[in-house]
Image 1 (cartoon, rainbow, N blue to C red):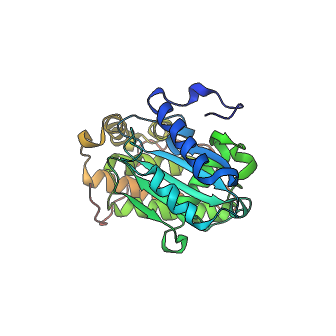
Image 2 (image 1 turned 45 degrees about the vertical axis):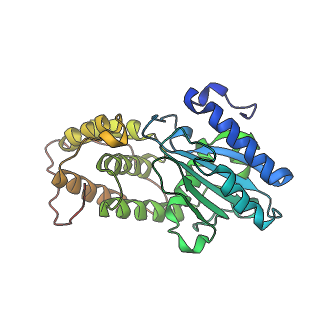
Length: 286
C-alpha cells in the first residue's frame, strides 16, 4: 500500500486496512491512468485523531482517464459501500497536467466527501467550489504528503505560488471567522496554524501550531488550551468555547494574516505580554 520511500508505520493502525482497500479500488477503476495516491491533511502532518479527524486523500491521474471513470470511482469509494472508519473521507482527484503547474484555482476533476459524519457528495465542476481549500491542501501535500501509491507527492504536485497561497489562507480565515458549519475548536486551531504558517513558512499540525501561539500570546492561552482539549475529544463531545473569546481571537488572527507581506512570511512568533485582545462586534456561531 505505502510507497517504498515512506515508513509504513506513518499510517495509523486504525486506517491501514481502509487505505489499502481505497488504493486497491482506485487502481482497479483508474488502471494505468493512476499516477499517485497521497494522504494529506492530518495524516500528512502526523496528527490524525481517530473519531475526530477526516481522512484527506489526493489522487493524481493522467488526463487521458475516461470521464466515466470518475463517477465509477466516486461510487466505489462511497461510504458505506466502502465503510470509512474515520469521521469522513475527503478525496480529491486531479489531472497531472493541472497538478504539475502552480495554481490558485480549485482545479479538481472529482471532489468526493463521504463517511459516517459527512454527507455524501461528489462534485465534478471545480468552478463551483471556493478555491482556497484545494490550494492549501496542495501546499500541504507538496511539502509533507504521505505517498500511499505511485510517485511521491513532490514529484507530482507543484507548490502554489506564495501570493496564491496567501490569498487562500486569507479566504480560509474569513471562512472560519464566519463560523458556519465549523466546530469552535477547529476554528481556533486552524487560526493558529494560519498564523504560524504566515510567520514561519511551515505547515504544522493543529496542536503543534496551537502550542506555538499559546506560548507567544499569553492573552489567548486559556482559549487555545481549551480548544486543544476539545479537539482531543470526539466531534460529538466537543467542548463549547466562549463565543466572545473565539470572536476576539479570530479577529486577531485575521489581522496577523492580513499584515503578512506578499513576498513571504515574517519572522518567528514573538510574545507581546500584557496586550489585550481586540474588541469586535462580528457575530459568529460556536
